[in-house]
Image 1 (spheres, rainbow, N blue to C red):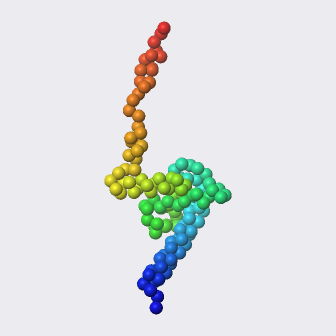
Image 2: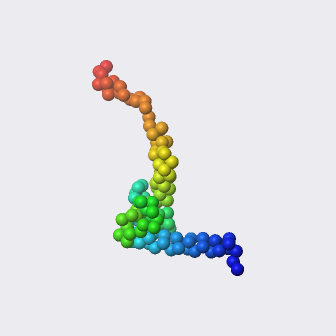
Image 3: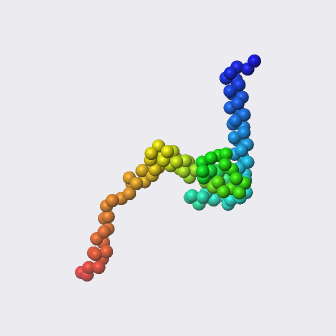
Amino acid sequence: MPTKSGNNKGIVAEMRRDKALREKSYREQALKLFPWVCGLCGREFAGKKLKELTVHHRDMNHDNNPADGSNWELLCIYCHENVHARGLAAEHGGTGREQEQQDVATQQPFAALAGLMGQKK
């Protein structure tokens, strides 16, 4: 008689196999439908680098895989991670852009430059 944990290991392994098959299936479909370019940064992929191109589910539902690819976009691993990180930040009350907003310059060191350039010596 299998132990309870042994049974769970079998279920988890089966779920992982099913997930891997689904991912392989929709990734292959997406690669046939779309150009091998990241939808955000525009980097092109081919050869060994193609493995860095991932399928992003626009509605974040990995089980929503319409054959026309309307819920997918190809993103490089870096942009894909960024999109998901922003989504997690938004779930926790942030926008995911707090650091970008902090880095905006508030000084205008060349504000008077136009006036100075118009002056004659």
